[in-house]
Each structure stands twice: as C-alpha cells, then as structure tokens.
Image (cartoon, rainbow, N blue to C red; front, side, top):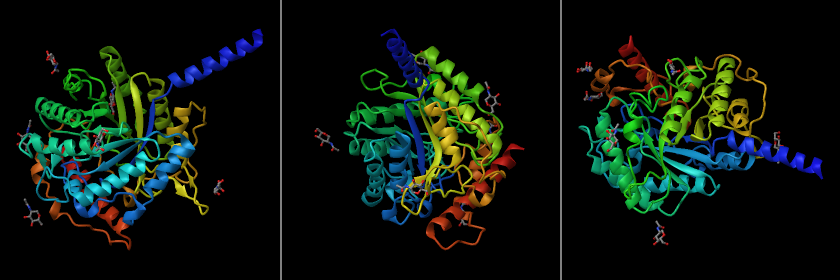
Length: 430
Ligand SMILES: *[C@@H]1O[C@H](CO)[C@@H](O)[C@H](O)[C@H]1NC(C)=O
Ligand SMILES: *[C@@H]1O[C@H](CO)[C@@H](O)[C@H](O)[C@H]1NC(C)=O
Ligand SMILES: *[C@@H]1O[C@H](CO)[C@@H](O)[C@H](O)[C@H]1NC(C)=O
Ligand SMILES: *[C@@H]1O[C@H](CO)[C@@H](O)[C@H](O)[C@H]1NC(C)=O
Ligand SMILES: *[C@@H]1O[C@H](CO)[C@@H](O)[C@H](O)[C@H]1NC(C)=O
Ligand SMILES: *[C@@H]1O[C@H](CO)[C@@H](O)[C@H](O)[C@H]1NC(C)=O
C-alpha cells in the first residue's frame, strides 16, 4: 500500500532525524561531594556533602531514579574531591580511605543501579591545596595511584566514565598532557579497558579556548596503551554569563559561536567531545540562551556525544543554577521549568515556547544561593597566578550566621568562600 510505505518512510525519517539531532548521553551533575572546593584545589572535608539520605544529606538516589525513569536521562556526573577520597585535607596521599571511598561508592552504586552512565569527577582543578599535580605539587604517580585504585574498583562497570579532573587552569600544558597520559595508561592497565575517559583542557575546559590555547591538539595526542584512541574524549565546559563563571544568574551569550568552533575542530580531526558542565539560571535571558545553546549541542550530536547540565543533587531548588526537582507529597519528583524546557526539551526535539519562569522572573542572582565552584574568569587572559600565593583557605571563615542544618551550614560556608574567591579573582582582573 503506497500510502502506508510513504507514511512509514516519513516516520522513519522523523525518527532518524530525531536520533541524529541528539546527543547520545543526556546528563545531570549530582553536586555536593565537591562543595567547598575552590579553583586552587582546596577541598575541605567539612563541606563535602555527597547527596545520599543514608549520609543524612539530600536524596540524590531518588533524584537520579526520577531523572532516568521520568525523563530518560542517561548520565550523571558525580563530583568528589581527592581530599575526601583519602580522608585528609592537609597532605596528599595515594591511598583511598575505605570509609570515604566506601561512601563515594554508595553514591556511584546508587547511580549505576538506575542504568545510567556514571561519571567519576575528581573536582580538584588539577591541584591539591594550591599545588599543581606534577608541577610542583603532588607527583603524577600519586594522582595516577588514586585513579588506578578507582579504575580497579570499577573495572567491570562499563557505564563508569572517568573525568580526570575538573577544570585545570594556569598550568603548563605539556606537563599536564603528560600527567593525563599517565592517568589514561593507569586506568586502562588497571582493567578499565573500554570505559569513556574525558580529557580536560588547561583553561577551565572552556569551549572558548579549548581548540586554540586550551590544549585540544595536545590532549588529542593521548592514547590508550595499545596506541588506539577508543573511549578518549575531549572534556568541554562553558557557562553563559559574561565571565563564563557559572556564578551569576545573568546570561550574555548562547555560546553557539564557541560550540561551533569546537564542533568544527572535532569534525575536522575526526574526534568527539562531551560537554560535561554547562548551566544557567531561570531568568528570561537565560531561558532563551540556554535553550538555544542546548538545541545547538543536540543538533551537533555527531561530535558532542553528551551534554551534562549543572546541577542537582545537594543543591536546593532555590540555587541560582538549580536543576533539582521538587519532591511532591506523594513521593514523586517534578522537574523545574529550566530543566524541562532547556535541558530535556532540546534533547527530545520538542518545540517548546521560551517563556520567563513564573517562579524566577526576577534574576536569581542572590548570593544566598550562589554556590558554584566556577570557571572563574576563564575567558580572561589575565595573570591570576598572583592569586594562588595569596589565597589561604584556612583564613576564610563564614561571615553569615550558620543555619540549623549541616547542609545549610555547609552551603553558607561554601557561599562565602566562593564569593571571596570571586572577589579576589575580580580584583586580579581589573
Ligand atoms: C572483574 O571481573 C574479573 C573477571 O570476571 C574478575 O576477575 C575481577 O575480580 C572483577 N573485578 C572486580 C573489581 O570486581
Ligand atoms: C602530537 O603528536 C605528534 C606526533 O607525535 C607530534 O608531531 C605533535 O607535535 C603533537 N602535537 C601536539 C600539539 O603536541
Ligand atoms: C566565545 O565566547 C566568548 C564569551 O564567552 C566570546 O567572547 C567569544 O567571542 C566567543 N568565540 C566565538 C568564536 O564565538
Ligand atoms: C504526585 O503528585 C504530583 C503533583 O501533584 C502529580 O503531578 C503526580 O501525578 C502525582 N503522582 C502520582 C503517582 O500520584
Ligand atoms: C604573574 O603574577 C605573579 C605574581 O604577581 C608573578 O610572579 C608572575 O611573574 C606573573 N606571570 C606573568 C606571566 O606575568
Ligand atoms: C592561613 O591562615 C591561618 C588562619 O588565619 C593561619 O594560621 C596560617 O598561618 C595561614 N597560612 C599561611 C600559609 O599564610
């Protein structure tokens, strides 16, 4: 029947088009384990807050189940810190602490049990307490040993993804690439032979510089021990505010220029990348820009294999970039408009109108919820190395009155630290 085959063809083309115009992995960052980490790799144990009810924190497991079951999310990013994994915030070590690594494993297992891919993220900015790995700080071997221990633990889980670190910056590219090569070799030789590994560039992974000064060419030279490049992907981050910080509720760009530059590079070099961090607020400008950006990323799903949005987990629903779903009295979760419209919508290819959010029509830039370890001033070429020496984590104390719950208290400490870091970075910039 001609009409049938015509119809079938249309349906098939429609499905085909949908599959093409889509990233393979849609993800959400389940933040909390990184709380308190600053861009110099200070990550206090006291503020690490893995979102698990078993630990007295947020219901990250329930959120992940919801995202998978109700939305079709297929990847979660699970930030933690080197300090947490070794249970020491003073001296770097290459030994996982059984208790803390066990808690992190509970979190990873909660993720794996949903059927999703689970990204291990050592959220240290290539540092330990201000000192750069392999560049005056802990030797490469120490950092490699942590990754080998993790790789041995998850060697048989094909859905574990290894993100070497979050947002390296202000370091020597060639040395950093050598460090990454050793980590890749270590992970593969530990038995994790097929899993995805994300290779982070040297300017906060920023899409704006990744393929120029950010090191893409050098990173793409990294190989598996057998010389192949299977499973090795460029790690890509980008925010939409005018400083690419992820710290404020404003949006200044839809990043299509930046992402098209990266897409062209990946296509030309026949490589692929994964956008493992991007986020925006629910302001009207951001709803427009973030939706447009994510439509572009999905439309270029041939080179961008994944899109992981920041963030849910331990963040509450009022956090400026929150994607945390609301728990209803009947136990189900409801997504916020930003997630439905600008993260899920572009993935599903739904043609959703862009409207300002009812609940956040004012720009949600309140510092009381400003809690992101940001790509601070990543767009800037200014010399921030002066800051490193001047920064002293232990001299920073919370200025706000601690709130009753541990989580809220952690958040306020974290907020203050980030505000101070932001102010210092700002001072260095101007
Ligand atoms: C992974 O599987 C291999 C082969 O079945 C087994 O020998 C090894 O102990 C497993 N590793 C872990 C960490 O479970
Ligand atoms: C990549 O490797 C090739 C061959 O070893 C080398 O010639 C080239 O300089 C490397 N590129 C970078 C950017 O390191
Ligand atoms: C990339 O984004 C930055 C702002 O974050 C902008 O200044 C720059 O012009 C963009 N680059 C391209 C090629 O669009
Ligand atoms: C739970 O409550 C929400 C919000 O009222 C509603 O949308 C949802 O359908 C309910 N789910 C079930 C299973 O009753
Ligand atoms: C950056 O600033 C630091 C501290 O002020 C200084 O020691 C260093 O030489 C500067 N580097 C460059 C490239 O300007
Ligand atoms: C950092 O600050 C703490 C508390 O003010 C102080 O005890 C410590 O000596 C400082 N460390 C450095 C390296 O300045």
